[in-house]
Length: 320
Image (cartoon, rainbow, N blue to C red):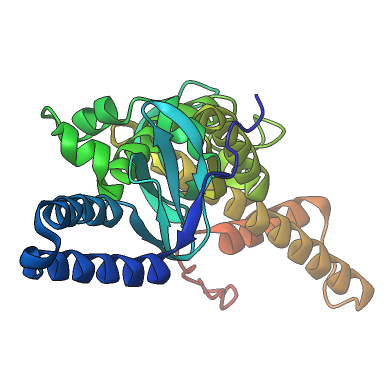
C-alpha cells in the first residue's frame, strides 16, 4: 500500500492580506449604512451583502505551526493535506481537520506473555511514533470508536472530530493496542534467557538491539495501515512473572553456586598438585602413596570447605 496523501492544490491567499481586505469591507458597509439618505435602499442592500461576505471571509482563516498539518475536506471529498506554516486564507467551505506531525512518546506498561519455552514473563516497551500519512490516519481508522475505547465512555463527536487533542489521543490508543500485539508476537518467538546453555541462539535478555529492531519492524508493519511510523522502539522492562520469579531466582542462585564450586575445586586441585610437586622436587619429605592420598584428601577438605578449617597440631609421639 502506497501513500494516499497528497499536497493541497486549491486556492489559498495570504491571511494578513485577506484580514486587511475584510476590515476594509466592513468599514465600507458601515459607511453605506450611515449614508442611507444618499444611497437609499441599494446602499442598504449592498451593506448587508458586504457584511454577509465579511462573515464568510472570517471562516476561511487558518494558521499552522511547524510540524502541523490540515487535512482539507470539501463536502466529504479529500482535497489534499496543507502543511505550509504561517497564516492563510482558504475556501471557508473546506473542513480543515487539524493534525500533529510531531513525534510522540508511548510507554507501554508491562504485560504478561509466554516466551518460546512457555515461561510466563512480564515485558514492556517504550516507543517514539509520529504520523506519516495523514489520509490513512484520518480516513482508514475509526478515531471516534478508538476514543470511546480509550475513555470507556461514549465519546463526544464534536470533541473527537474537531480537536487535534481528541484525534491524537485516539491515534495513541490505536498505537498502544497494536504495540501490545507486536510485543506478544516478538516475545513468543524467543526464550527469556539461555537457561545456562540449554537453549542456543538469540534470547530476550541477550538480544539487545536485534530484538529492538525486530520489534520496530513488526510495529511498522502493523501501523502502516493507519499512516503511522515508529521512529524507535525498545524494551524497557523484562522479568519473570511473579508466580515463577522465586523459583527462577533459586535456579539462578544454584547455577551461581555450582559455577563458584567449579572454580574452587579447579583451584584446589591446582594447589594440591603444586604442593606435592614442591615437596617432591625439594625433597622436604618423602611420602608413600597412602600418605599422599591422605594429604590430598586433607588439603581438598581445607581448600573446598565453606568454613575456615580448624588445624590440629601434631606434636609428635611420646614414649612413657
